[in-house]
Image (cartoon, rainbow, N blue to C red; front, side, top):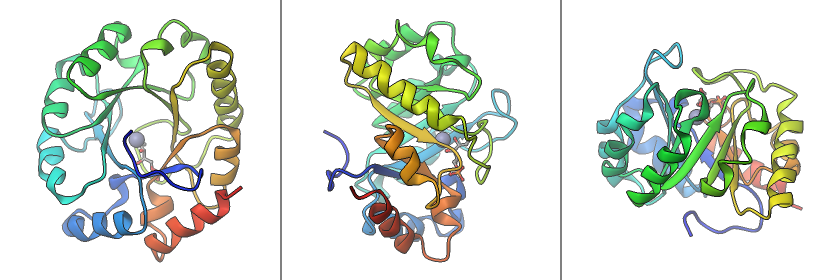
Length: 226
Ligand code: DX5
Ligand code: ZN
């Protein structure tokens, strides 16, 4: 089982998109010491989304800086061309977008066969109706609660009902798939997202752009405690 087991609260995946890369070693240590569960790494190609970030080299360079699983979110076209390289660079979880590939099933199998967990991300406009056929091959369902491309955007309110719908779908089908929610999650709305059914919350600005990221992580745990 990847990730540190905690008190039944959500897994917390700080997004390095909002970290200061000039001090990345310190920025990672800060969240790891505060009890983060994954490091979320957003890969953008300037085509699938209107922004550009990093490639596999950054994953390789970050790998020795932390014991946490690296959760790589690929917002790129033709992800099948690159997943192997991200896994070889050290990613334990690789998520690709449903909207970016015509062969999602093949891609999930490709990721698993390379020894990583397979994540499927869906944009806010993508219906849960596309999921039943593919979910048995998915380890993590990444529900986007903003349109991907930038950190610090506002949470789309209808995402809460979508997360609840995804949770119901998994229960109806008896499937053990982790639900990860990404975009606009902050201390203010994290409890709502978790109550709706999120196992894991990605938080970029909601952690790194607060006065004390470590303190915020502790407050998130408290806000979600049952
Ligand atoms: C958005 C990315 C997110 C982003 C989240 O395209 O996929 O992971 O970093 O950042 P916040 O939490 O600031 O919305
Ligand atoms: Zn992301």
